Image 1 (cartoon, rainbow, N blue to C red):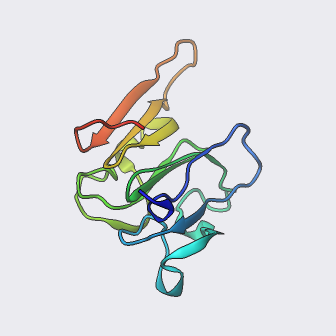
Image 2: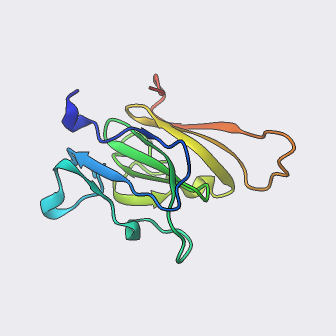
Image 3: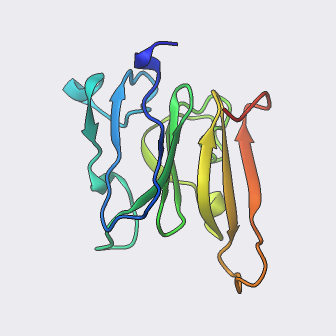
Length: 153
């Protein structure tokens, strides 16, 4: 694997008031969410916030992001998970095997508050807890989908 196969790897320590996702590299499956002349970037460039559908007027604050071989997953501060790129094994979590050139919210986790995400080559894993939680006991659960081989990096 060379540098063009890898988009990014990031762990955010604090939650800033605003944040951005920067992508670069090869984009055959849409993993950098770029089109046209920007399709294959050799330098990092931020993704426009309009690609992500969250509450109107809300500042997007990214708390975690992970990359697989040809897909990307990112967690926003409201607990939503977005995925995009290759989906040959269902690694985007949308119930299909169709790739996505732009980020899409993982609706299967709409009742969950996603805290972190990790990607293997063709799979995705997230730690989440129910949005309806009184906070007295940790209810965190591990969700894993995609190719059923060695998943986590």
